[in-house]
Structure formats: C-alpha cells, structure tokens
Length: 251
Image (tube, rainbow, N blue to C red):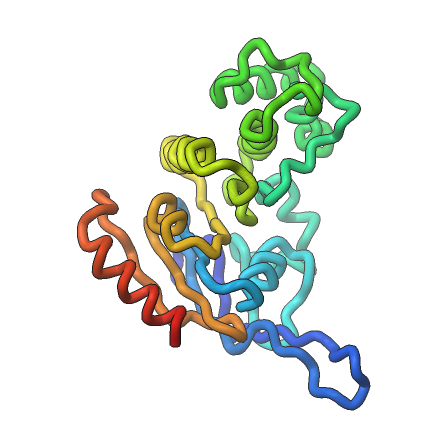
C-alpha cells in the first residue's frame, strides 16, 4: 500500500451465492489490486455487469470481500464503518432527495447525521446551494425542481459534509446530454478546487474521459484491464486512449 493511497485493494475477490444450490457461486470481483491516491479523480469504466457497483460497495463498506484486503484511509471500510462516518459521501444515480424536505433541508440531512449544530448546518447548506447555482431555491421542495436542479441539491448535500472521499454512482446518467455535460464539468472543478478524492462509476467512454484524470477500465469479473492517467489537457492523446478503451471493452 503506497503511503498516500486513500483507497487500497490487495488481491480482492467477492463472490455471491448462486440462486441454484447446485451452481457455483457468482464471482463479481476477481483478484483486484488497486491503489487510488489522495486527491485523484478516477473514473471506473466498464460494461454493465462487470462488477463496478460491487467494487463501489466494497469501498463504501456496504459489503466485505470474500478474499483479500480493502482499506480506505488505512481502515477496513466494512469492519470500521463507523470510524469512516463523515469521511465518505455518496452521490447516487438518482438524487435520493426526501420529498417532504426543502432543498436546504435535504442538504442539511448529512450534517444532521454528523450531529452538527443547527447554525453550522444552515450555513453550510446555504453556502453549497449557492455554490451549485441554487441560491433562491432553498425553500423549494424536490417536486418543484428540475432533474438537473435536484441532482445539484444531491451534490451540494455530499460536499456540505466536507467528506474527503466522494463516491459517485453514475449520477448524471438520467440527465439530458447538455445538462449532464455542464454538471460533470462543475462537479470535476469542485472536486479539484476542494482537494477531494473522487471515484466515479460510469459505462460511458465520453463521460469517463470528460470527468476522469485517471480512467480504469474493468472487465468481468471486476479486474483492471486498462489503467491510464490523462494529462492536464485531457484532449492530448484522447483519440488514442479512446481507441484503446474501445479495444479493451470489445475483447
């Protein structure tokens, strides 16, 4: 494990029992070894069913590996789940907003769970709503917001907790192309400006190349098939990288 690794996988495998008692267990992750450094923006790219979500759940501490070692900030995310409370925030594919709460109330939710004071919750929520372009919409309920605005509330909720690690499960896949592209750019800028470590799951090559500064292509069962870091100018060598990704996914 490298000294600055925020997320560490060492020969990790994860199997699930088969529905048929006579069948072999389903192996979703197979011998995955991977380090993600502090401050990296990583796109995990792969076809549907390749094990991206299982890898995501292993990082989040929602499941434990069948074999190998997972460490997040040096801790076992499954066994030390409570110790990582407030250090990991998740942005889901769907906004997961509570319909009976206003925009500001939804952003405050994570801070409530961290036992922050009423004043701190309100100040942080207002700041991040404004930062995401939602000033003036604090009192709006989710039904009054567009899909893009609801996802902005979801992103504000994640950043408001000041978690050092952001896990993103295809958060822009349900948005139209223009809205999704704009939000991806804003999200990537916020991650860099605030020094966060972000792991972004996607099945879109375009999205991976737009948001990631490192793209990891996974094949089934989840293992690294291609790992590439992009330069500061993501356009440099993009065509060659895109072609290589397409080759790996087609294999």
